[in-house]
Every structure is written in structure tokens, then in C-alpha cells.
Length: 193
Image 1: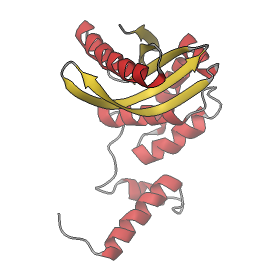
Image 2 (image 1 turned 90 degrees about the vertical axis):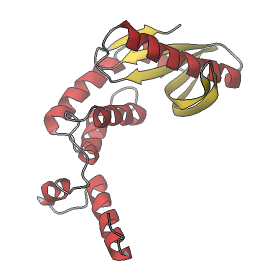
Image 3 (image 1 turned 30 degrees about the vertical axis):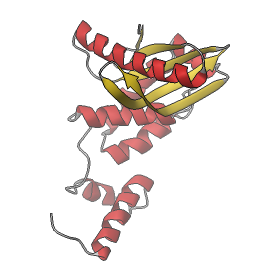
Image 4 (image 1 turned 90 degrees about the horizontal axis):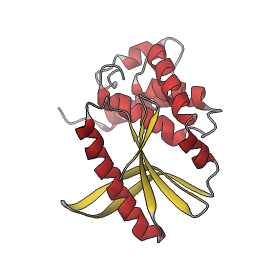
């Protein structure tokens, strides 16, 4: 890496803004997307796929009314193909139809991407709760998982993670918080202990 000039930095920022906000001329997107700084396609990179899906779930109206527009807008930013975006839209639609999401839509309080920190058995822990909501005095913390989970061990590990979020939130809200894993690829909900 070499030091860059202010003009080069401005050009990179302008190019990134064009990619995100769509101000490039027609046909220019393909050239910009091939830049060495462009993100990998979601199908090729699990981390990119997870970030893309999480950002959709953090942004989309829980009714799903704006799902297609949110997914396609973010697809450009993440370098996701139309075909991959269509598959992700189907996954997210399945998640939004879950009874858990009916509860979230009826919530009196709802928060997304909540930063958390607290003490855990292994020491100080921090993370971000994907969805937290309260309905009728009952709180839930939901952790969306986009991984292809292989076996019970992964579920136990993620269950412990969301249980830690639950414990940290309980201290803040002064009430019990039920931890839940939402397995996005499967369209399933798992109550964590």
C-alpha cells in the first residue's frame, strides 16, 4: 500500500458513493464493480452474505413492503448478483412470515442492532443484538444466524451467545428477556436457554 494524495482519496470516496447511491452513468457500474476494492460476491463469501442479509433485516420494514427495493439497493453495495438477491429475498420473506415476526410487528417497543456489553463466564463480552422487542411486558432478543449450521454444537454455541445478550439486556430493562435464534437459511426459530 502506498500513501495516497487527497485527490486520490476524494476519487475513491466519490466512486464508493456512486456505487452506493447510484449516481454513475448507465453502463459504468460494471466497470466500478470490477475495482480491486469492490466487495466479493455474496455467494462466494459467507461473511459478505451474512453482512448483506443482516443489513436487509436491520433496514427492511417488518411488513416486508419495501423488501425488494432494500435488497436490490444493498445488493449493489455488497456486489450481490440479481440471482443471489432473489434467493435472499425469498429467505427474508420466509423469516418475515414467522410467528416470531408477527410478535415483533405487534411490539410496543422495538430496537434493531443494539450494542451490548456485559460480564460472561469467560470474561467481558460484547456484541450486537439484531432485534430486541417488548410486547405485553415480555421482552425478546433475537439473533439472526445466516451460517449453514453443522450440528448441535453450533446451535449450543450460538444459543450461549444470545443467552448472554439476554442476560445483559435483562439488567438494562429490569425484566426477563427471552433469547431466540432465528436460522435465516432454514426459516426456523430456536428458543435458546
